[in-house]
Image 1 (cartoon, rainbow, N blue to C red):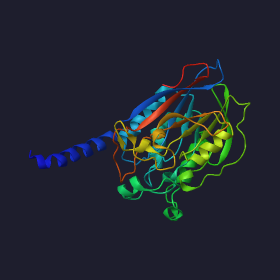
Image 2 (cartoon, one colour):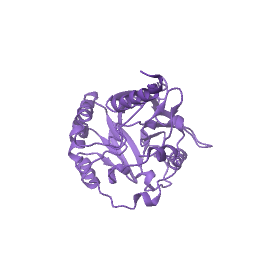
Image 3 (cartoon, rainbow, N blue to C red):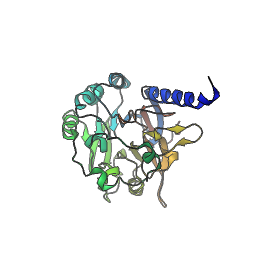
Length: 303
């Protein structure tokens, strides 16, 4: 091959790998010391950003297999849909997980069909809430059908809601918001329930206004998605963007969030399981679900 063609060949190889990586589904395992000292562990499966289309058989089969983990709780942080006819595929993929205790919030791609976007605009765009004009079109995805199906199977809707749920003999107190990326979140000033075994905040997009409020209100654990882990990551550099105002260093995984004068909250951001059908690539950022083992605060730290 002539040297002049080497960059073209390298670009083609990189694109081929990036497309293939979207099907390299990975289970992450994380330990979070967030329960009272001496507590028995709780196993929480965090799912996010599935972006399902009916033809994604491999993703659906992989998701069905997660029921074998037998988690105590499933937390779904939104963006389940990427197609008008995807609800049956989502329900089939989650399968037996829907028989377990679960909570959920929605993201923008539970409401609006994916649209073509400029990759350059995504990489250079702002980090704030999506502009109002971007979402003036009518909600066209069957989100109410999906919401009803989740509720009928026993999962708890946390879109701008508080709820309690008994999980493996423990009482968990939840607060959730509708998608902050759309500006749908309604934040209140109700402190975390200190009488519960654990108080948890659940959001689709990890905007700082949400994280700051929940940290100040005393929520020890916050779960979110939305970022896709950056989707395109550079080795030894990390995510290029987060698509919100969260810093790039926390685009995925377990970190802490702290506001002045308050104890830190644990923050877990899922890199998610899918992509928009119009940008079916991932690089150095495999699609993932995460099994979080919540342990007593006297146990070993995150790993």
